[in-house]
Length: 308
Image 1 (cartoon, rainbow, N blue to C red):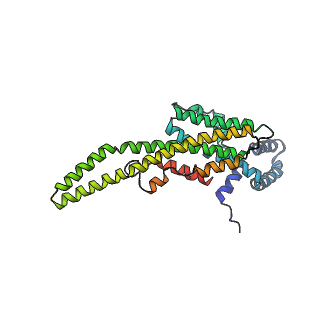
Image 2 (cartoon, rainbow, N blue to C red):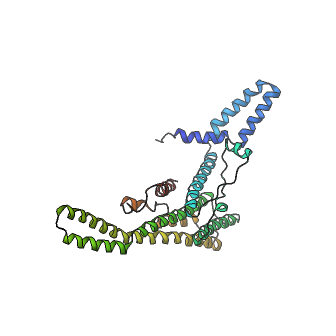
Image 3 (cartoon, helix red, strand yellow):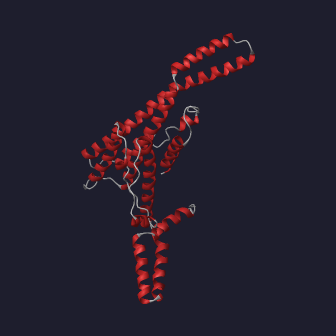
């Protein structure tokens, strides 16, 4: 038995149907007809409006269009967070009054993030290369034999966000490792061990034992954190290489099964998995990273991407 649809999602489709430009134009024409012909013109118009709002939101093509719009908006919101964390974003240009008024009825998705970037480095160049690769693939889709569908381009956008998520996670992890000064910790551990051997009072020994345990715990974390950082960087580099390969494959063979290629890329390299989730679950970042906006947002974004 199929589960009943959630009211919020059903209402979303109906709201998009109501704010569609065709429907708004019809309502405006109805208002003009009511002024010219009188209120009697409203009767058939309202019947047509009610029927349209009842039928259109349930049409699969319409729902697919709304879902693509909402998913693109979510992708860009997630991407804006990552780009701002990595390189900074200039504020969006001021919208005109007409644009703000139109936004009350139907939000238009504007992808202007690349133009608003502030700082430039090698990783940003790789990100822009990924974006350029997707644009080139869109151009290739115009060719008759190239089999690329819109859902595959939506998957490309998720892969680009995964690259940015790995860059943010790498930055967080590199900062955590920098706080674990191995030489200082080993020196502190040696001093505590020496004091522990000379300590006589039980109370002092308990304090020193706890300090020694903390030093050993931090030192034990370091190899795994360093290995994980290298893994994150390798996965990010793999995304860039694989996207280049996909573009080359499509150029060489327009009939390439891009869906299978993307599926293999996502599953083999765990692209949609929260990079910091495992480390947080094992408490390897405790005391090194503030579990605040940066880590929580990355985890939430990864979770949302996985559900998409």
